Length: 93
Image (cartoon, rainbow, N blue to C red):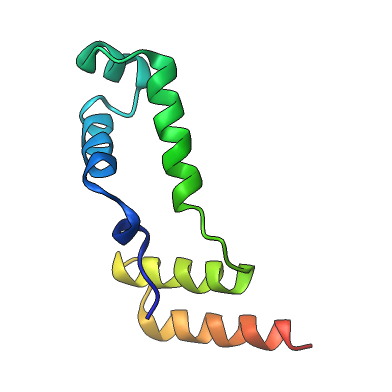
């Protein structure tokens, strides 16, 4: 099984995400709360996004997205499986 996106986070990344959520996802508010400049925070967020972006093909991205939807109970696993099989069929044509 592949690693989930949150398995790639270190403690500093998790802390940043919690702080960002506490600041209503507003960097200016987080800047005021932490004393870090907006630009430092923006750079940290950009690095986090880059680190988390999968370096895999689109097929793995699609599968990962379906897995996420199932984990979040947004999509039943039976429907996710059918969607993935149809996706694979379309790729093989």
